[in-house]
Image (cartoon, rainbow, N blue to C red):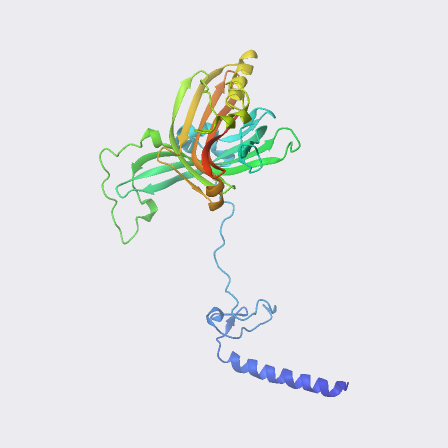
Length: 373
């Protein structure tokens, strides 16, 4: 190999490239700090200078830096979950007591979970188990306005996260379920544009007098996002009672199914959590009473998809474990010790395909949690 001709050829190539670049530069305006004003519009060459020597910053069509930098310190959620913001708490109404972090005892929760399984004698199995969990609730600062034209519906919102773990068995302490979502407290009020009242000015229409009141039976909303592929919208209301709640018995037995299906659940007794998971809630209240603690008052939140709600499921879920209905009741209890306790029951109706026939199976969970912060 002869190095000298190769170097001469390389030098010639560099001279030719420099000439081409010079011609192209004549088509472009002067650059500011090495970045062409119209580089993004197609100027083929961007000059580099001493202030901007990087070839990467001088790339063709390099985007101009944005003068806007968002303030990432602006919180979405109110500090402390909203418990230090009286104006937020007031608008949240019966949801305000949820704000904080709640945990359960290891064996306090019980889950009845029917699962289709083709090899099982009746075409399904029960994966029932005790569980413990952590739930956190945090308030959004401000309202979400649903504009109606002449008046609006304001939604004051709490975000929540839920993590559920197996209490025992071969999967003890493993995550079995996770979800997130929100609770809304809806009220009505006059429609206002506030800072949007700018030219061209369109005056807000006069509000009805009186403004229609929010239906209390749909004032509370729970929105659920479950990674199984389900999105749930359930509506309901709130009430308050003095003392402890009366926990209703539940039934996990499949609806309009052969009697042989019931064998999986054991003895049909309301004290059997395979039949009535709500039995663990009664047990928790009895344990409190045995220790001299009573419930002073209770806020009750009940929502149901059959109350103007809806459920969306992925195609696989529709074919195999279609979620038909969802309902839940939360009992937010103030104890005589000053501590707060949260009890809930949740019923999800599953449409399971057993040998080509669909049967309705209740999937019920119930637990008792204590507010820790």
